[in-house]
Amino acid sequence: MKKNILTLSILSASLLGITACSNNSGTSVEEHIGLFTADYVYDVSSNILANCRAKLLIEQSYLREGFSVIEVPKNTIAGDCLIVHYTGTITMLAIYPSILELNGEVLSYSFEQTEIHHIHADEGYITADSFDASYTLDDTHIIKNDSLEYEFLEGSKYTDVWYTTQWSDAAYAISSGKPINRHISGLYAFDPSALR
Image (cartoon, rainbow, N blue to C red; front, side, top):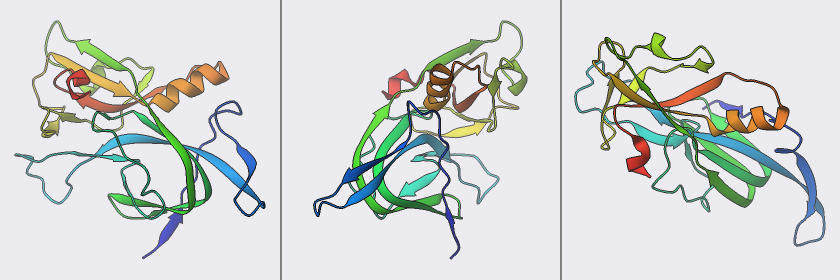
């Protein structure tokens, strides 16, 4: 099975970097900081959406070898960010959903919660064109309920939609002082605060 090396985006010198630290034997090792977004994967094996449920993963990947110490909180929603301080290298298997493996050690980790936004249509229904141009919407699946059943936004009849954005986009905009298009991570037919 082919493996691809995961390339981490460096958000800013103040947020990410590589530092030297000492291990138990006193030798110097490089410490890396990675930001990984929680997002949904959808069943792509069937065109029938009835009773299909989304699964929340990290970077659309299962965390495997090397990541066993990480416990994803049950109240995580799409757009939340896993920040990992680690040594070694990370590989991502080229499958869907993918698998993230760490050949190294997790030194510490934390989760940051993203923002929840709301959009309302006074006339008609919410479509992909309803979102402000400063947001990037790559996936139009919408989570219908807290059981994580989903459907496509287009063709649905919602006048209210909640959406979450990638926490890392906000961190980059703040640290760089530059405006950035925010990526929409999750669409919901209900207020996802209920999942927290």
